[in-house]
Image 1 (cartoon, rainbow, N blue to C red):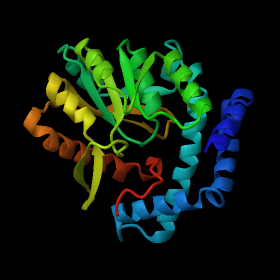
Image 2: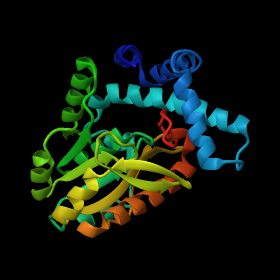
Image 3: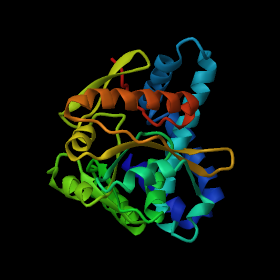
Image 4: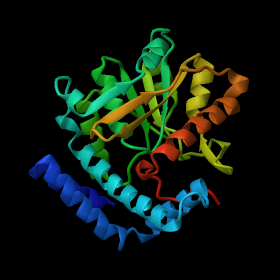
Amino acid sequence: MTFLFFLIRVLGYFLPKDLAELTTRGIARLFYYSVYRKGASNHFSNLKAVFGDEIEEKKLREISKRAEYNLAIALYEHSIMDRLNSRNYSKYLKAENIENLFQAYREGNGVVILSAHLGNYEWGAALMAFKGLPVAVISIEYKTEFIKRLYEVNRKKVGINVFYVRRSFSGPIRFLKRGGVLAIAADRKFGESNIPVELFNGKIEIPKGAFFLASRLNASIVPAFSLKEQDRLYHVYFEKPYKITRDQIEDGARRYAKILEKYIKRYPEQWLVFDKIWN
């Protein structure tokens, strides 16, 4: 993955966007049939669990192949994220139902954004920053220093702060108490504390931390997803905010899972999960 990321980064730096995207898709095709065959197989299995016999296997494999292309494009787009700014972001991003976010933000208790590995959640976080909100993401620490530094630099250039998983909760707590907007891709577990939920009639585990913070700090939860539409813009969809108490953490997680199902069904080629999430 490091080599792929580096290669796409170089292309993104030297080539115009349309040509870079075309070349990136070609690289993704090569990797789909070679290095990442297991990931492609996992993605197809995930799609099969979602759709069952609703869609024939040939069509599912085409969807899976497009998802591999979209993953490569998402990596490329992250490499050029520093080109986004407050003057040009509307050429790439469009907010949908953003009043749901501002309604939660105005309460002053902080907002927990629950996104997913769907579309391009990094650019969705950038849109919130360009709208004038204090934004931070909870992220894993990448294995290679090159990728970690690149992500940090690009995020900070567009106004996104970063808190890393497996470090103290004190940073995110202070951030939310100051009324910040804290985003997490909550569809995959990445720590020891997780919540079992049902997704498409199968059990998966998702991170508990975001729900824990929301319940303890009276912060609103807003599910939000950044998906590319036919106009080639990322439309960032903000669902209605909701709150949970300390004894409603599992209910809050189940509510998020139901919303996530709707978006995965609608945008399966933009669902970028290449590990098996069901046993």
